[in-house]
Picture 1 (spheres, one colour):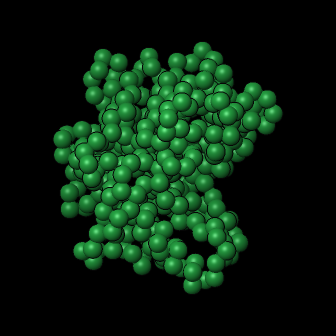
Picture 2: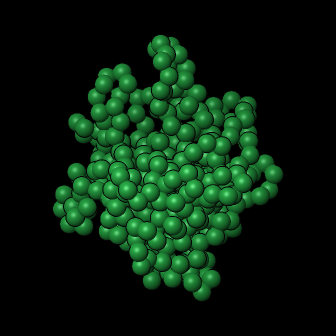
Length: 330
């Protein structure tokens, strides 16, 4: 059986709900929800990881999964989507997912051992100086297990939204460099922590996917060469243990005059003022998970894909990211 798997950073999805967690059904929020629904209908995912989802309160009186289910009932009537969420973040923009309950079972299965939990501080040596420093995930990665409807195990899934490298404060260039280095080391720490979890799964023979907005790409650009690594490569794994290397479902990105292709988003460079295409949304899978049809739902680059072109306007308007998807073949 084949399964359609995807991940989508839905820009500030919490804005589509009122203070009680009900979907807004008027104004610009309704229109945006309708665009998102068109995209999801076109993707037809059996499982969709969501980045920047609706808020979960620590008290659990309002949760991302409950709000997602209300949203799908309103804007995807007749669908059988259920929601799932994990540890709440200390801020906003939660990690969550929807899945077809008649096709899959999806469980929140976090590591609960002290020192390994994603919702607690952890120690990591990010500079190879044999000195571990304390870090903490601002948004605890979402740890899930995907099962077939007969309870047979398919894969572990980690949905992540790792530290942005963007500098948004008013700073001089020296401070900019300092903050940039700090943020990149935190990004490395988060990805190294996730990779430790991946290794633990693979050592037990459990297939694994990592997906989400990683805020980094594959290639070592001039700045990344200062550290001799990138966050995505840390997630992919150790080349000395090739059987544990994760593979991207996308083709290798290429650099052109506008940035990277394929690309899932773009940003305006703070120094040059130019807009640059970036591939920062990723799905990485372990080698025991066969796949096909990996793609970014980017209407600007996928001009020959009629399904993507059929939702071109919603894709452009609904979010500042494009979704990524692939077919898992079982």
